[in-house]
Amino acid sequence: MVGGAVGIVGHLSICDEAIITGYSMVSHSITRPGVYSSGIPTEEAGVWRRIVGRIKRIRLMGRAPRSGGTEDEYSGRCCAEQRG
Image 1 (tube, helix red, strand yellow):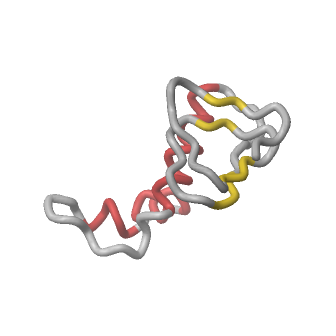
Image 2 (cartoon, rainbow, N blue to C red):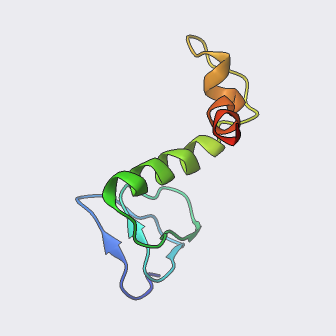
């Protein structure tokens, strides 16, 4: 099920039983059933890219580093530095 004003970019696949809420932007294939949402208020492009990058890094916080990775990549140090 796809809600109103959803943008689907490129040639990708969306599995059965996936629900995409209104005003979402789908930029990669969805391979697992579930409810998917996206969307943040409009920002200047550079600011928006930094916000999205930070949101994606939140998932890495608290995980053990993969081989070849550094502790700082996964510790959230970038966020702590900004707090001062």
